[in-house]
Image (tube, rainbow, N blue to C red):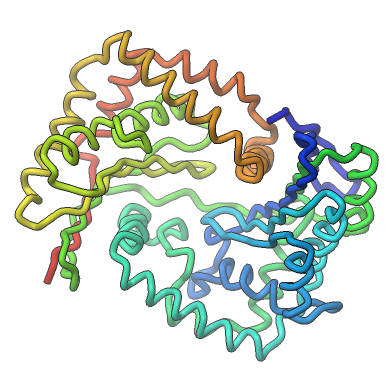
Length: 410
């Protein structure tokens, strides 16, 4: 995917223009720098609730007309909420790009949040919360973040709590969007094969008249971390276990080393160390993985597995063995070259999903102020040394700094 052209409109809205492959398909997304982290105490889940309610009516449209606007021409409209962002995105045939941009602008800035729809959506979200509680694989990650960031908004589940969701009022939605849905905290990205002038004209038509505004919000740093262990009885047949700690943020110089380390340990490849030595060799766990997720000023590293309770102790020993090897023994130059090639290949293949790449560019522009070119990413991966990986492993895998959460079958 080509590098984007960055344009800043007079109202402060950042725009990314990416030339498409000429296949007649266009993608666009509006990324807003506000998510769970911007919620006040007692309003947990508000950002996600607003994302749902944006589709419930505007000054011009009822819910049906919003949902049908792109669907009727074969397009797709969707949204998501994270701890730090809210995103509205659409994919359409290029001839309908103007329709998609106008609709995103309408729901982002002219939603009316009808009272009747708010009350209906509370039931929908509460049902979604309960469905997570019935899925331990999903719930354990939320609970683990709550353990790592106890007392901080990063530790709150994106869906919120039933009590907080039930308390939402129309004024809460309006106050949040008035404060955070502002041009200075947004990136609009478009990928299409249309002429630059034509795309920019359509963007200016639908977003150029917005008032310039940049609400400065101070994100509180995470509280001082203290490792802890917790066991919770759950009505499940399997035992679910997760362990880890806070990790490096988006701007940290060791971020790419951590990405590489996580990838070889328990990333998506079936040849990851954890998969080979726990699932393939012993058959103790169908799912065993590690993960690394970044925020603007921090991150999370974790190892997760689900297993029969009788294999819990042995699986823990095997996981610890792999972590200790990476922390104590340097990886050979041959193997590190292989792992780098694998990670770079995965990133190359991911470029085929143009919408995901476009939204990733938007996140980089929003949080870093620029989009990191693909070749620079590869160069940073290639620059990671065996000494770097060992040093990072010793810090991230230190048992003294590791928290654990286990769902024990009741």
